[in-house]
Image (cartoon, rainbow, N blue to C red; front, side):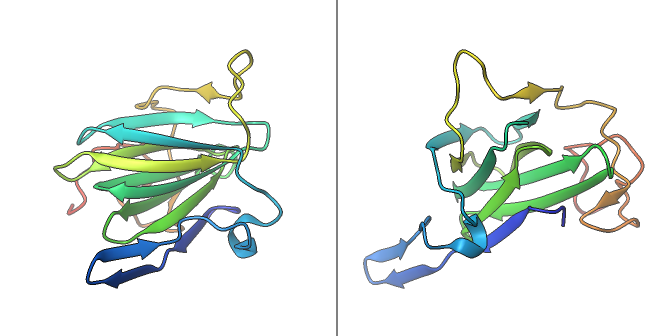
Length: 167
């Protein structure tokens, strides 16, 4: 994976009432290092919705937790032309940490909306946002590696958020 991308499985503790799950702890140093959360956000997306591409150049890290539905989370490095793709869902609770200097975005997959809680390490500055954007279908995003592989059929083509997973 790209340097700094982290996927951290969460522990779901089921009982007869349902389940309990810790979603963030300050002592998870293997995930957070010396950083801590400055802001928490909630995002609801309809099936098939793409929210991409953007990046943060002032050191922000985003930590995504899909609590309902399923989501494809992608990060792309302009320099190495590498793209990492993680599918996260309510059925496999995990934190996906993405350093903000990578172009990143999401797509809700499946037939139901996704509900995502995400934490960031820098407060959003309304007057001077740390956010660069490019179109979700930017033809300049052409990965040479997808999840570390060169034999993925999506390599060396403009990134297609809607490429069928079975082909």
